[in-house]
Length: 58
Image (cartoon, rainbow, N blue to C red; front, side):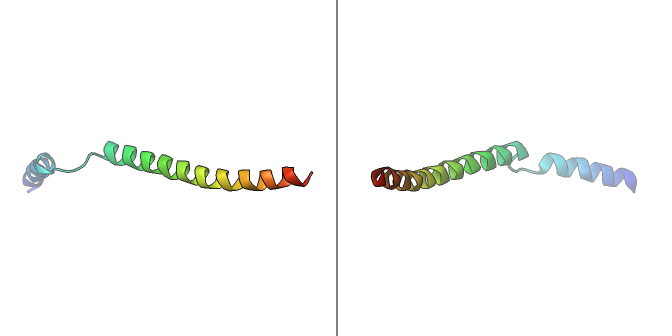
């Protein structure tokens, strides 16, 4: 019985097709970098506008 389970587990492991976990990790990392870049661009442009208003007051 245990031998049959081991054989089924090995056969199932070889038969499974899917995305490797490394690709998922790399994809998540790239997605987070893109979101960080968008957030810094949006936040940075807003901060520059406020800084230019403060310099015109002086």
